[in-house]
Image (tube, rainbow, N blue to C red):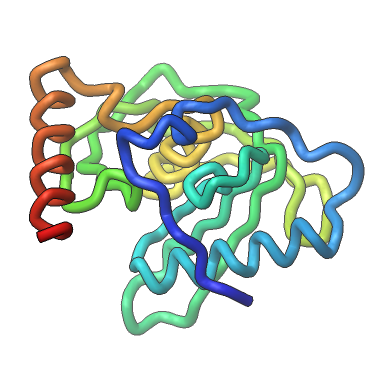
Length: 172
C-alpha cells in the first residue's frame, strides 16, 4: 500500500468524467483501492474517488466509522444510482480536494445503489443519512463535479479564493 497525492481544485483532472472499470475487479483495482483507503485515512477523510488521486476510473472508497470505532472500509466499483428519493436533506459537506472549506449542500435523503464490491460481487442496497450524502458526493466526483459546484456562484468563488490564498501561503 502507498499514499497517493490528493489533487485539489482547480486541478483540471478533477473535472474529467471517470471511465467504467471494464471486466472483472482485478488485483490491480484492489491495490488501487487499498492505496486510496490508506490515503483517505491519512488525510483524514471519510470518502475518496479514484479521480481525486489522478486515476479516472469509476472507483470509490469510504469509511463512515467514527473516531474510536473499528474501521469499516467500503469499496465501490462502477457505482450507479438506481433511484433517488424526492425528499432531500441538507448536510454540511467538505472535500479533500477542496481543503478547509465546508458548506451546506442539499441532496436526496435516500438513494438505491448498485455497484461491485472489493471482490467483484454485485451489490444492490439503499443508503440514507450520512451514507447517502457521502456516496452521492463521491459519485459526483466520477462525473467531474465538486461539491462546490452545487453552491451559488458567490460561495463557489469564495471557496476558490480561499484555496488560492492557502496555496500561496503554503509556497512561501
